[in-house]
Length: 179
Image 1 (tube, rainbow, N blue to C red):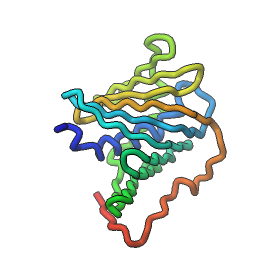
Image 2: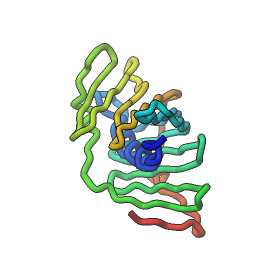
Image 3: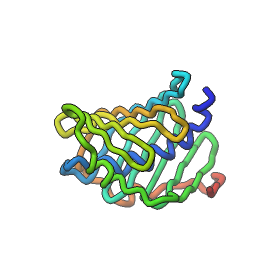
């Protein structure tokens, strides 16, 4: 699985993309919560599947809590990404190198067929599937040409989520890595 070696980067890209893109297409919600299944498939058709929960709040707060096959929490505020990996007892801090405005990207998506939308940003194309104003899935090819498909279920919109929920609680004994 040569391209799947870069899964952490795919998770990083996903956290940027998904955390801020859930509110467009003229939908009237500012908070989103759902269970997700993320499938990353390389060019040899080998896949790895992750499961967890996602929480997002406008303008750009998001938290992806991966529960299977590993535990990992990925926080973003639109400026930085913080990945907490309990199995490794480490925290990775990464600044987002470019201003990525996914609200505008998804808002400018065009409907290609009923409930299917496409959006483009730089060299990336996103496919969004809706069902009666409910986000069903988002897919895209990452920088390693892996197909990333994120399916959502048990979606909740506009539930109460305080900003403080998106502040990570980092154990003092974890290694801190800055990239």
